[in-house]
Length: 421
Image (cartoon, rainbow, N blue to C red):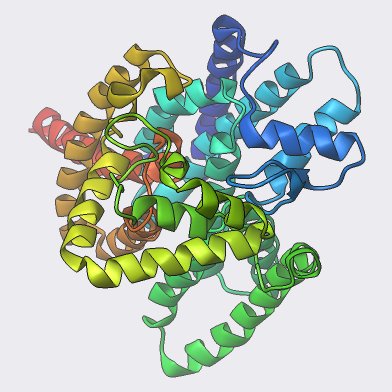
C-alpha cells in the first residue's frame, strides 16, 4: 500500500501527465482562433467595451443580463481585455490546467471517502477521461464548473475529516466562488454537509453547526455583490442567475420535447406567437423568465402525466445523450461522431458505476450516500427543465469514475488474493 507522501506524488505525476494530454488536445483540435463563444462571448466583449454585464439573452434585446453566473464571462473578458494575439488559446490553456487539477482533487476525494486504491484508480481514469480532455477546447463553462464542483466537494471532505475554523473558512471561500460558476452548488453542498451532520453526536452537531454557519456566511459575503447587482438591475431577488425560468418553460409547454428544440428541429422560443414574444421582449430579463416560469407551472398542473413522461425522458437525455444532433444537425456545434463517441463512453461507465454502487453499499456506505446525493442534486434541475447539452453532466461525471473505480479496486484485491494463494 502506498504511503500518503508517495500517494500524493503519484497524484501529482498523473496531474502533470493529464495536463500534457490536455494541452496537446487544445493544439490538435485547433479551435482557438475563432471559436463559437455563444452568450458568454457576447457578455465578455460587452464588458471589455464598457457596456457592463449585458447581452442579448433569449426573447429580448441586448440589455443587462444574469442569464449566466459571472465567473466564466469574467474569465473570458480578462483575456480579451489584456489584448494578447490569441485570447481564446489562453482561455483553453487555463481550462486545460483546471481540468488537470481535477485529477488531483478526484484522487484525494476518492482516497478519503473510499480507500487509497480507489483514489489511485479514480485519478488514473480521470487523467485519460475523454470528455475532460475534449471540453478544454470548448468556449463554455464546462471545465470551470467541473473544477469548481470538484473543489467544493474536496473542501467538504476536508471539513468532514477534521472540522475546525480554518477548514470551515476554506469551505465557505470555495463554496462562494463555486456558486459564481455553478448555481446547483447552492443545494448540492448543503445537502452533502447535512448527510455528515446527521451522523454526528448531539454535542458534535452543535459545534459543527457554528462552524458551518461561519462557512455559509463567508460564501454569502462572496456572492452578495452579484446578488445586490441583480436586485438593482431587475428590481427582484435573483441570487445567482435568471435562466431557470426560461429553461423550465422550454421543458414544460405544449410543444415540449425534453430538450431545446421541437421534434421538427425548431428552437423552442420560436413556438411563441409573435405578439406574445413582443410582450416578453418588453420586460426585463428576470421579469420575462418569471412569466414563463409561471406559465410552465400552470401547464404542469394541467398535464401532470405529460410532465412525468418528459421528466423520465430528460433523465435519459442527461445521462445518455440528447437527440438534438439527430433532429437538428444545423444547430449543433460538435461533429456528429462526437455524440456517438459519448454514447460509447457513457454506457460502459454507467454500468460500471452501478456495479460499483452495489459494492460500495457493503463496503463504503457513507461514501455511497454522499456520491448518490451529489448525482441527484445535479440531475434534478435538468430532469424538470431541459437536458439539451452533454456538458451539463460533466461536473459530476467524476463521481461515476469514482464508483467505477470501486469495481477496479475490487478486481485488484481479487487479483492480489489469487497471487498470494
